[in-house]
Image (tube, rainbow, N blue to C red; front, side, top):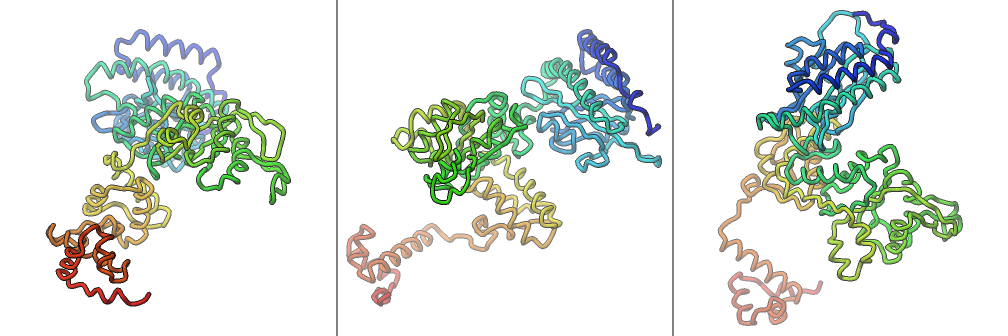
Length: 512
């Protein structure tokens, strides 16, 4: 195949494009079974766009894999090799994100897997790859993609992408309805397929979060993210921004608890030169920097009463003044806030303005702690193993069975952040390709793995009781009467317990 095709021979005219769309529409309207018509569809698209290959991949629910359903310009053997996990390669990435991609030169793109490329001794040819999601009713059920020789004409690639996008929108709805009405095994995976590319998780708890992200992203509604520290509230905020119409605008973030109240107003709204000691020049605040984009305010429950009033005005009027200034500035920024506190409770207690709470709580999203999404623990652990092994140049490939058991058994009070730190440490100290149980922090070690299996309940309680007695005696400098009062027991019982555990009270009389 010649590598020097001219742009004119590749590019169809506007009339041809319109005619091709009409043919695709007719094919969809007249086909009793759209899935059976996909081979004819990809052939039609390929011939009208004058491209080498056109491919439809669909998601198999039973395996969770993307497989090639129909393809033009590809042998049966090549089709069989075309299987992708969600998030794998360009195709898997498009399914996960729900957004199309254009790769001008696939040989320069490390994510392009080339599983269906022909092995040839001919001179390599510059190919472009366009991949469009098949999306209907907030579900991605597959992709429509094209591979073509290109002279790096970005305008041509954009026009091809728009054409494929229209075709994808024509077939996605009927295709989804047909698959839903058929065998339940062929039904597409629902909202997990639409999981944002920056979040790892397939549990039911996270599917609910993904559904809420999909519902709110397209609007400018104020969002309140709630959840324990370390669950990934910032990642959810960024996912909402990336899926919104503001994705090309800035994403500005600020931890409100990290600054004292006197500095927070300046960070949020900026200041004029000379507004306070050290204000040597005018400075823009985070709201001003977030214009036409999104501002994410973490730990919103910790802001002062004065800042609450200023923030309420911004939410209501979309305007503010810099600290020390008189000029009123207007901004167009979407506000996403987050807190690990119960904002409704602190509002009821009078520590947070009720009117501001209602302004922030328009669309609340509760992000589950890691202990409530155990199905995601291994997915996250594998992701972090790959991430830190690559960053540190290590050959770590997997977790051992003992390490997996320990990860699953642990309660994760620090949530995803704690898991990430544990895996980073394990990758760092591992001396082989496998992370063993002893590579995990002591807090995750089980008694069996660490050789510290507890004794009987009686001996365990006795150890705790002795520890309490020693601590009380130390505090009272060996005064048994005072120690007894601290523990809420009589002096007689105190004496009996001291005798039982053979405690020398005189050693606590020594001056500190």
